[in-house]
Length: 106
Image (cartoon, helix red, strand yellow):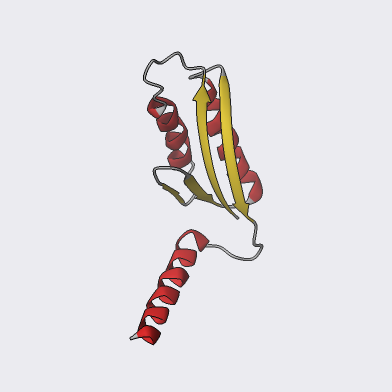
């Protein structure tokens, strides 16, 4: 399964509203998990089996909770039994489709 999630605290008491320290704590947990992952400016993507992926999301969410009085978690999952390596494979298929469509237009 692939999971894309974003977790952030609120009620941090910071005047600038920054949450980078909390997000860093969450991403550290994701990276230390050993599961395939990718972090962008908006989401962290994680790949693995149901229980291991959601354990990492839970621990990352708990870590963020230490930075504020509330936590917001946004999560999207792609559950496709029998497939692995999709974190990169989906992007590769997309790039191939874009290249193929571009060749047809030439």
